[in-house]
Amino acid sequence: MDVEIRDSARKHGVSDDDITHALRHPLKAFPNDSGGDLVIGPSTTGALLELGVRGWRSRQMVVFHAMPARDKFLSHPQRRR
Image 1: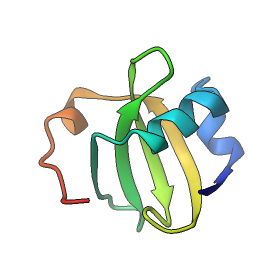
Image 2 (image 1 turned 30 degrees about the horizontal axis):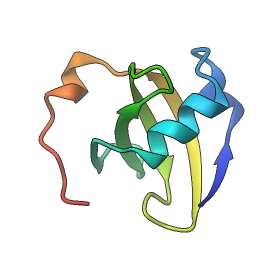
Image 3 (image 1 turned 60 degrees about the horizontal axis):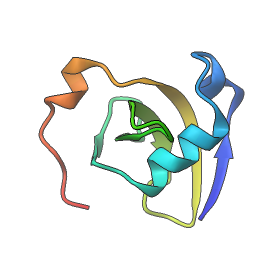
Image 4 (image 1 turned 90 degrees about the vertical axis):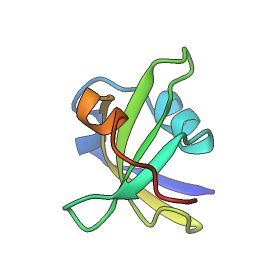
């Protein structure tokens, strides 16, 4: 898995290790309004993160958003992976 983490994904203080861990252990993924996908997964400590990703399920992903998962996305229906 090749992952590019943009500076915008670091805006909320989520580490690259936590972002990568969440991508490797996704719990939910669904399309978002930005033309990418929103992925919910755990950080290295188990805290749930929401990630904005382009190229989800491809060999080359770009993460442009990362922050603690908000309730509105935790209750969103899951798209089949």
